[in-house]
Image (cartoon, rainbow, N blue to C red; front, side, top):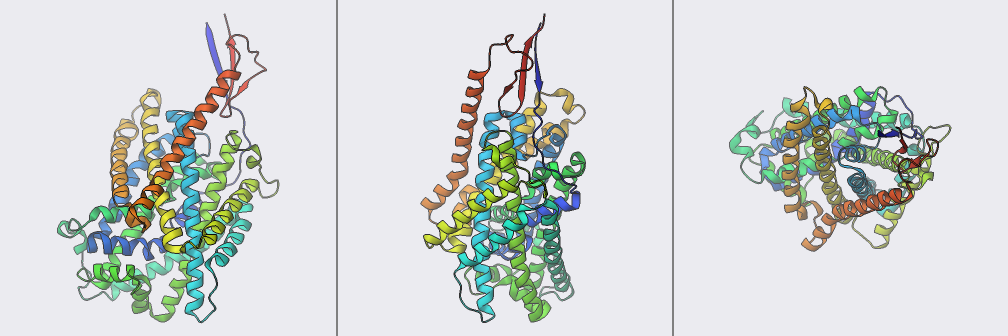
Length: 501
């Protein structure tokens, strides 16, 4: 009887004791709530369905919750901290997994570069608003990059503490603003018109859902911190659900509060004036409700929100590279763990260099930091995020379809809901691609080219995985002639083949 025994190679792993709250801080910080409120929310209100935009955030949250059901159900069966890469590899094979790994690296690198452009512009704008000198945005971006490099090189607990402080302050001031609005509402009072079917179905609700989805980028990174989590089989699922509910609820509630503050009849016009550069809905509403000091506080916290976002993505990308290097997909040096900080130190340095080069390239070509850098890179990341989640939902279906024991008694969670999630994500992708020029603020040609980048990354990663598989097959001796102490290392696991009578 022929048997094949597979033994998993013990990789170098990161360590830590991040709890649910710590991971949620990392994930919600990556979603940059205050940045979304100041940027995405006016877009959803002004270009979407006006006063009905809060429902767009609820729909986006519902899609991601459905996705999370299958994601969480599969989590106990995934042992590597590679997030979507690990899930897709287990469910669909290493070729698809490599394609998704490439998409993830491209998407996260793009949004990080975009945030560096945004924060460079925002710091310069704030300094000039208080009478300071005009400084080129790349100077502030590179200064921010240096701080991120310092924190990212060290243990994840330090980043979690910094992000926790920034996030608590950020969410706290917005909640104070929301309560102030409800106490002192606009001309229509505390109205629930946003949730009336006649309101949220009027206008382009698809556009509202589109910009709501872009506000969730980063929520899925809970599984990236698996090795640094305390009891990951419980912590990762709890953090995933908590992050989606917290982000979605916070966005929808705050969007509704702004409708109450301005009035359902005027909110679309006010949001549009913000998009035209003739107003600032976030800061103007804060000034009306909390005075000049409140406005200044929100302005400063907007900067900390951007910083927390870029630090979070730095940590995510460094860990993606670390996992891929441990599997010998990327250079092994990237899998180095610092002996003192227990962090992916060399991967962190490489990520800092990559971000620095991108910022330098954008600066050299004189690209506008908001429209050119942030807008275009956010568009690339949004398409990449949906590809990642759609592939993961399909991987969940494939995994549980062929593992009857794993899905026993959980047909709803492992098959039915993932199908619904996949359909919702396909709908989300259609919305994003059909309205992509709104995301990038660029021409049709430029937007098409940017939208194709994540798809091209997937194809490139797929062929790398295919070539890797072919190399392993060529190197592997015939079955029955391989001694047990001479394993085949294919980069994903070590295979021992032996023939027993």
